[in-house]
Amino acid sequence: PTSCIPREQYTTSNGDCMYLTLCHIHTQYQLTAPTETSDRVCKNWTKCGPGQGKKTGTGTNTTDVECETCRDDDKQYSNSWDFTECKDHIPCDVGYGSNWESTLNTTASECVPCVLGATYSDVKDFRPCQVVATCTSGQYEATAPNTTSDRVCLPASICNTTQTKLLNHTNDTATLCV
Image 1 (cartoon, rainbow, N blue to C red):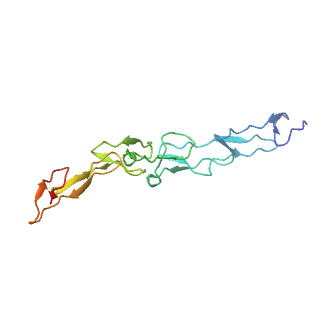
Image 2 (image 1 turned 60 degrees about the vertical axis):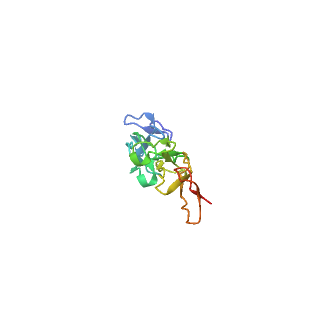
Image 3 (image 1 turned 45 degrees about the horizontal axis):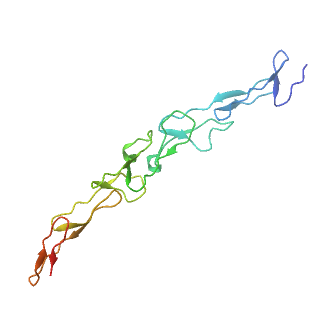
């Protein structure tokens, strides 16, 4: 009988030495360990589909991948069939809003610029651009909005009976009383 190399070869039924199958790293795991007379059996890892990711710590050389749902509250997604963990949505910079709330856990969110005079974002986060405030009757615009700050509205002054009105209130100015 031929002597096979331990942990590298096994003996076939006709006495030949055969090298053990090597499981592909990062795509397969060992389902059945080899013996002196049998080869190891490798099995492909389970692929996780869109909306799912590989659970941390699974998918080793001896264990299959376990899939877990990408969680909206963790702001995660997965858009492919693969062995990767859920990916994180990216927070948007000031002046940009995220479409994260309208995406599913299968789509990456995108950052879109806020619209000057209509929307703004003053924090880096996952929210969409916020709607700019509208000054009401009796208020004037003290500070114009931009894509990173809201409009500031202040109350227009009302002259008392002993004051004279020098400048009437408009949408952009306060009433000036002296």
